[in-house]
Image 1 (cartoon, rainbow, N blue to C red):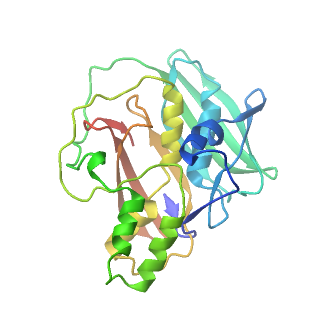
Image 2 (tube, rainbow, N blue to C red; image 1 turned 45 degrees about the horizontal axis):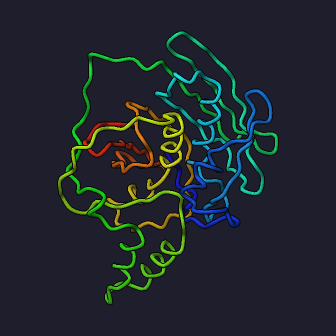
Image 3 (tube, helix red, strand yellow; image 1 turned 60 degrees about the vertical axis):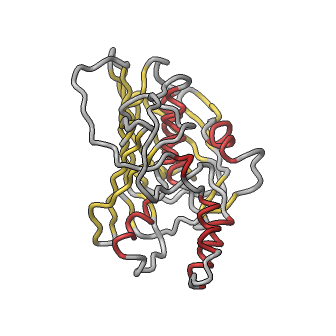
Length: 286
């Protein structure tokens, strides 16, 4: 759920070393331990609103929670509330409370603090991985494989080459082309077939979930404006509350399909639903 208060244009903050996609894991999601269950997170990308990106706070909070459970415990759900705007000029402190540690399930509460006040709170539930005889899921929509799609840079360039493009859209597209974000995004535009590749789960499963949590706060505004054809000017947009469920192990550095929809909007509040799938249609997260 988000409130219409902040646009989500992005810009670089400082000069992070190396590619932003590698910085996402090696720095943004690599928290500094200060004490038991106390961590410090830093920022390498800040939106033009000069407020911290909500996905960064979600991802870092999940990293902090994951460090307090056993290696075999994997996150299956996450429930968050954004209570204050994040200040990009100072680091964020993450305080973890070990709410419950059980044989099968464990719960962790995380509070993100700046200037002595909480800016974000969340609860994460972890469980021991175990097989289940009951399984079902929604069908995956028919979309082309990522190799057949244009990346953002190529897509924007294609639009900018259109001599009939209105100037107001040209300005916005140039702004999009100039920014750099730490994930690669491609937009499905036509039906197609996907390859039969298995869902991958090798490696650090917790870190891949943390990367997915970071990515989860993208693209909401554009989805909400689709029914209105951008007839309304949005001055601000901020996240209010945020929940995630993790259904199967996956690798966040492999292509995943993000299905985003907005079933309701009103009173300056937008509600979103998102499903994340692997190449073969397996539902990975929602």
